[in-house]
Image (cartoon, rainbow, N blue to C red; front, side):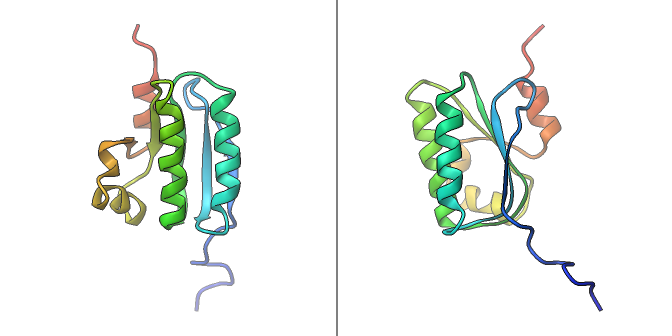
Length: 125
């Protein structure tokens, strides 16, 4: 018998967490119609206060629905005005499949892991 909480989605948590000096946020839990407005607010604020590529870490995401996808598309549009990239860390799985099915994987800079993204964001020596 599973223990209480086992297999249950995590609470929605946003963390501002730069990766390799790049600004960004980490998202944990469920990104859905209830939590999307909070992410929108944080993304807009953090994007406006930063320069260069912006990282959104979805490694610990339990659920991504269409409202969450819309928030990311909006963030990509905001960054695109300044010719900046939206870097999304999203391992293979259901959330990644949404990006592939909708062809958003061609609009976003996607990485499977934090390590992969960090290596890509390091300045050339």
